[in-house]
Amino acid sequence: FVGMLPSRHKQSQGRQSQLRMMAKLPKVAVMVNGLPGAMGKEVAAACLRRGLEVCSVGLTGPQVDEECVDVDDGEGGKPQTIRLVKGPVTGAGDEECDARLQGLVAGYRESGTRLIAVDYTHPTAVNPNGMLYARHKMDFVMGTTGGDRDKLLKDVEEAGIYAVIAPNMAKQIVALQAGLETMAGTFPGAFEGYNLRVVESHQSSKADTSGTAKALIASFGTLVGKPYKVEDVIAMIRDREGQLEFGVPEAGLGGHAFHTYQLLSPDGSVEFQFRHNVVGRRIYAEGTVDALTYLAQQHGPDKKVFNMVDVLKAGAMK
Ligand SMILES: NC(=O)C1=CN([C@@H]2O[C@H](COP(=O)(O)OP(=O)(O)OC[C@H]3O[C@@H](n4cnc5c(N)ncnc54)[C@H](OP(=O)(O)O)[C@@H]3O)[C@@H](O)[C@H]2O)C=CC1
Ligand SMILES: O=C(O)C1=N[C@H](C(=O)O)C[C@H](O)C1
Image (tube, rainbow, N blue to C red; front, top):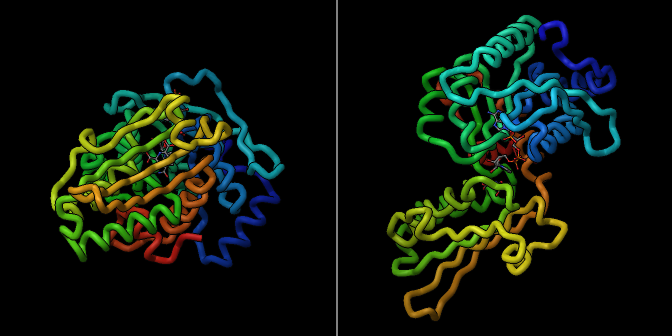
């Protein structure tokens, strides 16, 4: 693997070094994990559009038979072939995956390039992959939702690596999240007695309840004055008929995130609604590149684990 390391796209490398000089970025390569999944492809495309080098190896899942996948910038640019390696499945370490990563990480280190992983895989892969990055001291951006988030944080902190971990990378949704956190911190109990109801619709292949909705109900809980259990307030829509009825356009059935948060006063006379509806996935991929660019500039010893609110507050989202 070491021999086939950084991509040889001369034109794109020229653009990369130009952008690096402008932004004073260290040399960075991105390992996209979760290929050939929907977000993996979107993120690879966004990296190529924005001049980040994409590593020629990426992790894949247990059900994928292909050995390689082509990614491109989504705008007619030259495709790049990524070799797929099965990610760890047990969390105890998968020998082949570890051996391959070891060579890869060492090769990039020798070439003075910071290799950062981006993870858009599966809720069951969050902790095994987090442990893998910890073992190999690889910084990462974790977009995958679900898993044991406390364990993920603990593993990362113990390994002393840098990470951005967030259930939503879309700038405007991160701003809503930050705004609600501020509102809840400033006016706890302002909605005392109100009833919260959350409906989220996603493509039928989505394995878990929305990580974004889970994050937002924490703030709503403070506003209402009582913590919520996910299963008590969040209704999921994953079926075609329900999705269309909820307003998802036919073209968005394969990839969408429609969320409505409703707060209703006890007598039903006052209603608040917060709604964010996204068709497609490009917005998250662009935010992921912002997170990568931000992470690439982090070297300090004090704070090493960030979320997207940190990235937004730092003014690092385009
Ligand atoms: N933070 C954010 O802004 C966003 C987060 N997401 C989250 O990203 C995740 C992925 O979403 P999406 O791309 O739509 O899902 P997809 O199912 O399209 O893609 C996931 C891919 O990851 C593979 N995979 C499974 N396990 C592993 C592993 N251990 N290592 C590497 N790859 C693995 C899957 O393979 P196989 O088919 O074999 O399982 C599949 O190819 C979800 O958790 C989703 O909620 C999505 C959008 C935005
Ligand atoms: O699976 C998705 O598609 C998405 N997942 C994230 C979540 O669980 O909140 C973000 C967004 O909703 C898209």
